[in-house]
Image (cartoon, rainbow over all chains, first blue to last red; front, side, top):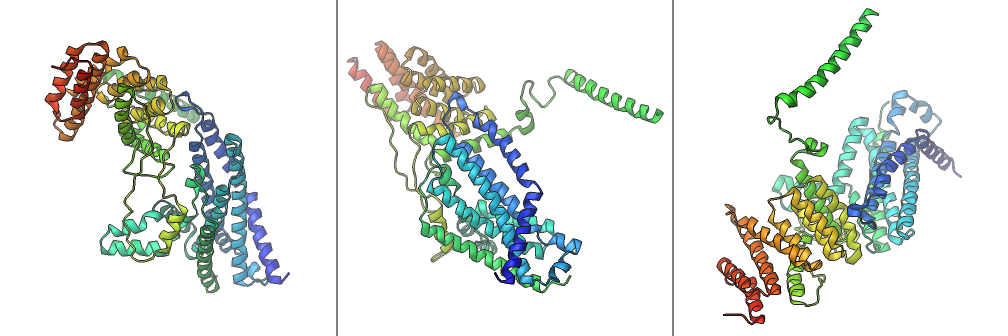
Length: 260
Length: 291
């Protein structure tokens, strides 16, 4: 194992430990239980049998919490190091700046994916027990694409943390991700209805913005639509890898030129 | 110590003053307060926004009916109308009942990007583009949203109608549908649509013409006031025609040909070319009493 790989693994492991040390997961699970338990026993008009509203709510919570965890972890990777000046001994190890950044990114991604795995396992068990369907293909695809979503948002949060203040980074990243989830699909149609300056802006957002809605298979999972082709799945994952790589390239460029 | 005691007394006095005002204001300003007595917390907090939220919840039910896909030109309401007409033919004339899926071809969304757009290609392959309806027992999935819509705003008559349609016609629970419509009528006494739906469920699903007839009578009565809005007036006239048909149909079942003739005359005076006029004539012909 090369020195760089060993350093990267050590940095990544630290980020994973940090997530579980702060007990975020416990809060998330308690909150989910408080929301989902009353829904589980709800029988509208006295008729039992409806389950999709419950699945949709559960998956919405999974998406919300994964967004909060992914953005929260990635945007907190560097600012505390700068504030407490622990970045100096870290860079004096010696660890190359690129290695430090990639290691921290992989750590944030691993931490977010580990939390996501727990969420999806809990959801899969809940859906299996309620409906008797255990981990269908579309569910596995939803999980795989959700990992792609985390790869994009952690890279975005990390790049933003080097360019903006922590609060501005969280606000901008959160708005752009939620905005794309809601409107990303409709951007071409929205652009077509606008006059020139607005149309150009919307078209630019369409081409350059993070199309996180590609990773959202909730509609297929909740409403039991067939799985997508694995080729399409691969294309979406390539998009995620490309977008994350572009964000990391920006972050590396900024970090290399940063004066502490 | 004295300072602490003073603070305690001030706090107790403040709480006492708030309680006294809370009791005195409704008593002194009775009838002049903005809130209606007896309204629940949701009503007080959200006010008229409740109706909009309720309609959003109803839209969600429509989305569920189409497997999570929003189709603007196909709604449960349009399906209910088709079903209503089929029910008209099927139940009133003794034919087989049923409502099959129909094909809607939505116009493709306007595209702002000319040429090949890889992002739109990915989007079309990831998100569902097909059109389907929930069928049979699966339709129970829309009920939580319709329940929430009717609870969020009791003024949303469409939520009651859609909920009753699903319960009575699709899930074969007409008693539950009747209960829901009765609640809707209590909350919306001026709405002829709910009276009509209630009459239809009683007649078509519970075959209780005696209890259905007063609801068609009340529908007709509620449709009579003149409307300034032309679209609303046309809507009410169509509803009145349908109520008149059912009144004629029930009269025919009783063997009351004179009453059928009165209904036919009323329908002819409203719209001579309407299918209801044709159907009422057919009723008179089959009873052998046409003049």
